[in-house]
Amino acid sequence: MMTEQSMMMGLGLGMAMILQVATAAEAVKPAAGGFGAPEDITFKALFDGSPQKYVQLTPATGVSPTKPVDVLLAFHGHGSDRWQYINDGRGECKGARDFAAAHGMIYISPDYRAATSWMGPAAEADVKQIIGLLRKKHKVGRVFLTGASMGGTSVLIFAALHPDLVDGVTSLNGMANMEEYKGFLPAIAASYGGDKKTKPEEYKKRSAELFPEKFTMPVAFAVGGKDGIVPPDSVRRLAAKLKDMKRDVLMIDNLNGGHATSHADTTAALEFMLKTATAKPKKKTAF
Image (cartoon, rainbow, N blue to C red; front, side):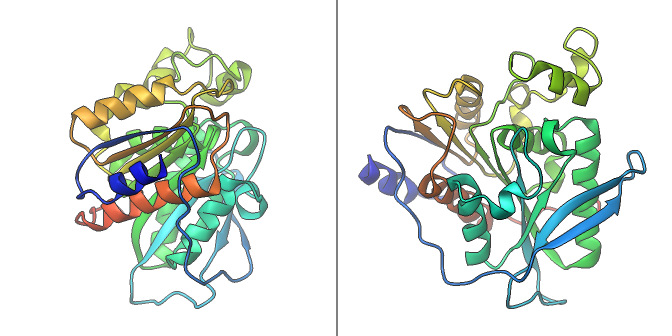
């Protein structure tokens, strides 16, 4: 299976790829590098005036005021907060940190309304505001998103709602259809302002599977075939739709995996996202 993946990763850009694996992907070792001390940043949310937070890691070598720097925003899972993707040693988190460091990116881990977000309206507004703040402070090149579980769901939601702000997405063990998802219903209802009966429009527009045309950027997925927390089928369907549309997509489908993605698979997904995005012209944004 590793040999198959190496062959698939070596194909030309612009080609949709669906990869079935039963074991972890081969690791892509990051280059030497690191970050300075974490900056815990508070901003006043335009959405409701509340204080909100994100953590920023800046390359230890510094950021040029004239040379564009790419940004990776990493989104935590249900029950956690902005520090998960800064401190946690699990594969999804360390893989994202190592990848950003290897490529000299600014690394951002938002609270995005913290423990039970699921990218509701407030979280969506906060993320859009954070991207705007970063563009005012730095000469930002491209903006990439990654996350796992609730975070993997949230990056799909945000990219579908704001494709003009996103240059690439890596979604790990996420959900692509909030209309059909049966997990964490009270938390999601609180975030979305109501349940599926009272706020059906919120669940629909946050179901990325229903809007494949919005994914104009490279997208990498990883799912576990035995994931009982966030079932993989909606992501599989979205990946298949994107493949049919000849979009840049990679699916790492670990048939025996559960609700986790290894460091190796995380790195492979992120590297695919970056490699294919590099071949595309940079998007123009409203910021």
